[in-house]
Amino acid sequence: LVFLVDEVSQFMAGNTPIGYGGFIDVDAHATDFSDGNVAPGSIARDFYIPGAIPIGAGGGGEVDADFTAKGTRFFFTTETPSDYGTIQSRLEFDFLGSPGGNERVSNSYNPRLRVAWAELGNWRVGQDWSTFQNTRAIPESASFLVGSDGMIFVRQAQVRYTAGNLMLSLENPDTTVTPSGGGARIDAGDGALPDAVARYDWAGDFGTVSVSALARNLAIEAPGVDGNALGWGLAVQGRIVLAQNSDIRFSLAGGEGLGRYIGLNAVNGAVIDASGDIEAIPSIGGLVAWRQGLGEGRRFNLGYSH
Image 1 (tube, rainbow, N blue to C red):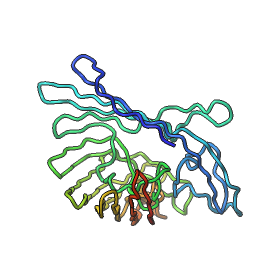
Image 2 (tube, rainbow, N blue to C red):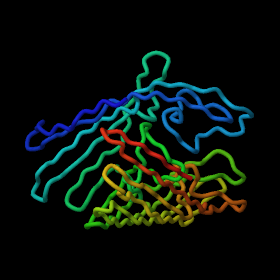
Image 3 (cartoon, helix red, strand yellow):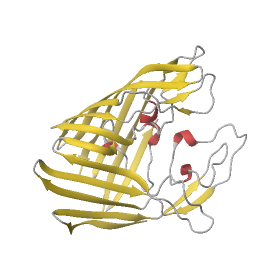
């Protein structure tokens, strides 16, 4: 159940128009896994995260029901004239994944930063959707996110240059590593080089299609381990218009060391081998979704992700 608030542009601060808007989102979730449960406060109870599926618990869990308003979202936008052109910005929050709050009494949750960027001319600096991802390919759903198994889905700090249909960016690096022999994921956070992304979009009456390329320096410094590896990925994503209110959305990505860029970090970027070196992990994933309008604002969606 979503209550929309339209963006308002009449609020002024000096010579800067400030827009604001968002929505109130109230959800009812039922969570059921065949091989265990997840904790009540887990974000995996708010939306589907492939890597959070419990395995090896030795039996099925019970169905868990949750009512929540954490998907509620609000944003602010600005447009400030300057000697160099108009400076635009966007600041956006919701409450999903909040480390604060519980369901026992007050259900109080901390705001979570989604987007925070400023743009001048061809340059955008701040936190935004990764340039590697085409958000038009995200399937429509009542829940926050579906089809995430093979989906590219990342928001992070970056510096992006856009020239027509071409986008180039340097983005926040972070390496997730599997220890030698398996075990808990290591969030290394090491490495001096940013992730580099190039993307080109085609758009027209047919819809939109993009091709993206990613290059990463996978790095970790830990006792007995100090290594680097090259990570790379290629992706084709888009939305093809079939008719009014009807389209096909798709994404296909693959490479070595894609890691957290695909499947909500279902697979790590690298693994530590027996010699203490790190090797990039190959991965491939994708999705396809059909959206069919039924008239009077009603839609039907069917998709597959892997």
